[in-house]
Length: 421
Image 1 (tube, rainbow, N blue to C red):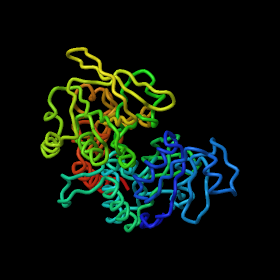
Image 2: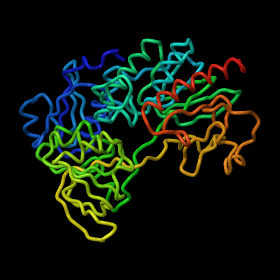
Image 3: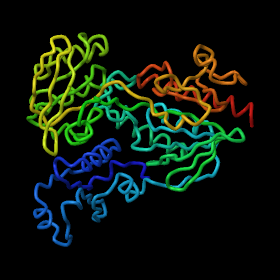
Image 4: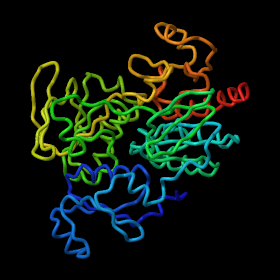
C-alpha cells in the first residue's frame, strides 16, 4: 500500500446516480482519503460513445477507471483495493500482537505497539478509520484547533503505523478464531492465517437501523448509515434529513447545510442539549438552514427504485407529515461488532459489548467466567485478549478516549507478554 494514498488523483467512478454499489465505492474511496471524480451515467449509450472500446450494458456499471487508465466493471471494494495494491498477505505467521479494527483505538494501539518493538498486525474488514472515519469534521480532538476530518485523522495514523512497521491487512474477515496454547489462531476468508500471542479487539460499533418497513429496499439508495461525507456535494439544492441527536449527527447536519437547500435533524427526545456538545448545539441553533424536529421518528419510506419521500411521526401528538426527499442519513446509537466472540469464552454484556477488568467481578458477569486469573483494566475474561474503544462495556464514546485506551491496552499487553513468554 502506498504511504500517500492521496497521490491517486485520477480515479474516476462511473455509475447511475441511484446506484447502491456506486455509493459503496464512493464511500470507501472517500474514507480511504482517495481523490476521485464521480461521473453520473444517466444513459449507457453515452458511456459507450465516450468509450467505444467497451461493449458494456447497464449491469456492468458501476465502472472504475484506475490510475493506470484501466477499467474494472461492477467491482467490489475488495476488487478496487486489490487493483490499487492495498490487499497484501501477512508478512509473518506469528505476531506478538494482533489488533482487530482500524478505528482510532486500533490505530493508536498499532502505533504504540510497533513503536515499542512488538511485531504487530492490524486487521480491518473495511476502510481504515472506523465509524470516526466517516465524520466530516472532528473539532474537539486535542491538537487540531481548526478541526480535522475523521478520514484525514485516520490516514495520518495509518501512515504512522506503516512507518513503525505495522502489518496492515485490509478488507479481511475472519471465518474462524480460537484461543489455543495461550495464543489466538485466526483463519481469514482469503485462506490466510495468523497466530498472535496477545490480541486487542477494537472492532467498534456500527450505526443502528431505523427498523421500519422496506428499510432494506432503500439502503444506500436514499437511506444511508453514517455521516455521508462522500455525498455532501451531491446534495446541492436538496432537502436532507439527518436522524440522530449525537455529535456525529450534529456535525453531519452542519456539513450538509453547506450544500443542501435545507437540513432537517430528527431526534426522538425533546432536548438536543442532552446528547450534543455545546459548540455544535450553538451553531445548529444559529443556522437558518437547519431545523430540528423533536419527539420525532421516521415511520415510512417511499419511492420506486430509490427514496423519494418519508413520513415523519411526532410521538407526542401522533401527527404525521410526508416530506419529499432523496437523502436520509442515519446516525443513531450503535451496536458493537462482536459477533465473532459469540463462540469464545469472552464475556459480553446484554448488548454485546466486551466486558473487561473489574466489571467482570460485578453481577451478572461474575458468574460467566472461571476467575482463573485477575484481568487487567482492559483485559477480557480470556487472558491476553484485551478490548479498547467503543466496543468495550462502559467505554466513553469519544475519539480521544478511544485513542487513549488503545495506547493503554499496549501497556497491559507488554505486561502480559513479559509474564507469559
